[in-house]
Length: 360
Image (cartoon, rainbow, N blue to C red; front, side, top):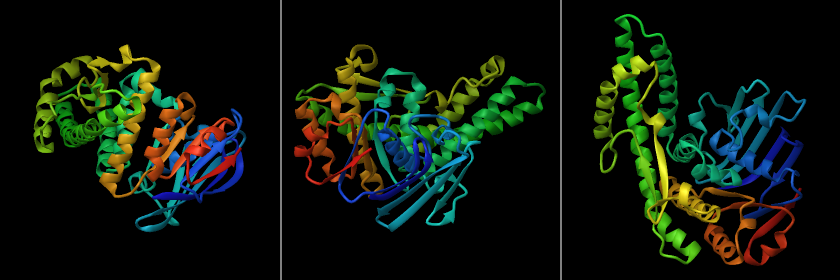
């Protein structure tokens, strides 16, 4: 898989700009604030239908404009594909895939698969559980349409359930609550199952990658802190546990007027030599840990979909020494890669065989 063309209209600081990509590695260079990261964001949005920089789509609309457009052309095992997205100032979207209007996001999420590493990625370790859930949800959604659908249903039902719990009066409400809990168990169990699968896959790979990045034998792993026991369990077994869990907390939730258990409260812990990376690792160690996770994610995406993801490295290499830069560039050489850098691309060029430079 590779992206061959990108057109931006009223997107961030680009009133109109067309890009064509002909090489394996594209280096995007320019001064700070020139718009390098905006290109990365646009490519990533084509993949996930959401920005990794903001929760509001209309933040990407150029000031004083009513809309923005992202148009991508890419090549997959199915041939040439086109994806066009129009984002209005009111946050509404219109999407076309191969010139056909798209009604559901699940039809296009992951059609262009990307793996993104940016300075914001450090939040995965440093910030709260919502950042870690967002990371795994975006990663798995791009390789599993069923997961994305289950997640959308789950989020909708949990909102409805919380609204019900806030005004829980009358015996008839118990029937509605049971209906919501059944839907949460059906979809939440699949979410838990796939999160466990994805983290298990990461753990099989990240130790070797981290060791090659650092030259150490350090023990690195990710601990999945799920709401129900998921290790070595089938999706059906997890669903039974999920149903029992929700039944056990039913009256506590009614009393608190809020959901107290569920996949929306999952978390992950990142551990280096059995110490929590959030508390005990330096920023440099955290960055290398996340780079190992990024590379492992590319391997999983390739294995699960049969398509090579596009790798997006936004202002990452400047923080690494030459040996680690060489390893990173060698490791990702089999993937189409976009790299942003602030006018110091000359140091990278001897390490890359097939590249083009876009100066912003």
